[in-house]
Amino acid sequence: MTYATEPRPAQAPPGDRKSPRPKKRRGRILLLTLLVLLIAAGGTGYWLYSGLDGNIKGVDLDKAIGDDRPPKLPTSGQNLLILGSDSRDGANAALHTGHVSGARSDTALVMHIPEGRTRAVAVSIPRDTLVTRPECTKADGTKVPGANRVMFNSIYSQVGPACVVKTVEQMSGVRMDHYMEIDFAGFKGLVDAIGGVTVNVPQDIHDSSSGLNLTAGTHRLDGTQSLQFVRTRHGIGDGSDLGRIGLQQQFMLALLSEVKKQDLMGSPTKAYTIADKLTAALTTDSQLASLTKLAEFGRSLNGVDPANMETIMLPVAYDRTDPNRVVAAMPQAGELWKAIRSDAEIPESAKKSPATGG
Image (cartoon, rainbow, N blue to C red):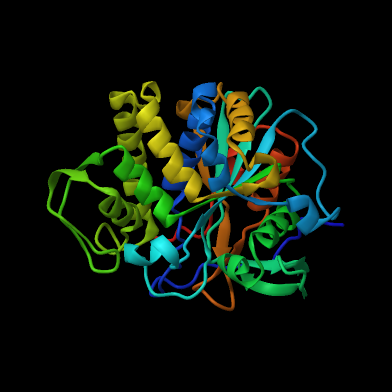
């Protein structure tokens, strides 16, 4: 099986065309993942609350995907696929995230933890990337044939999370050791559980799309406002995802500062509240679907310092047929995946994307 193929060359569209706007909410999903693992690794006291085990939903990737998978890393490094679900159902329906049926992979991150597990690299896959979807099996056993030029974020709603994992593995040749999914409600619940997060806004933000209205200055954001903040695109900068990424990074630092200031890990009551909110909105692969298993995995990552974490967008180029879509840019994307497959340093040339989105 050949896992990575080179797409057709793509050229940037003329300057008067709109650039595609990949939905990269990588900051909030990366942070939520780290907090989940931090809580899980905190000590045996936390999993005395055995009811939390029942909150976590599990997906058996080996059963769903079968043997048609890339080999595992040749080292002790790990790869984790993180999805942020944009389902508008259930608790998410009240969060003003739009009126779209079903669910999509609102955010997709391949987190690579190299051997030694003291640092990490998160590769964001733009949701508008056109990919080849392999043949997959739905949860009910229905076979879905493969298809070309499928928008990446549609795979989740069409076939399910296991097919997203299989697609990522096929396009990259990188074996996903684990899978984790968090939805909108999980993000809101986290912020509300810690009592809000303080951010400094350098300019007025009025975004009718996200619903966020803030004046310049310091604000204490609750869960709903925080979700609006990290989703805001139209109310700041040039209206592209470039401004949103800046807000996400700002919010991530503010949330980490809030956690440190409150010493949440030293408060079993608050730690339980946060764990309850997050696990209720969490889906993982079956190997991580309990607090005990999450704790074991979390402890293996104790050496990862957030200061040593790097975020990269999968290098993409504008699709020649549809400039509002992107395709993996070669040779950059190929170099990126090759480095991860061999657990090697990612070259600078593999981090540059022809499609800037701005």
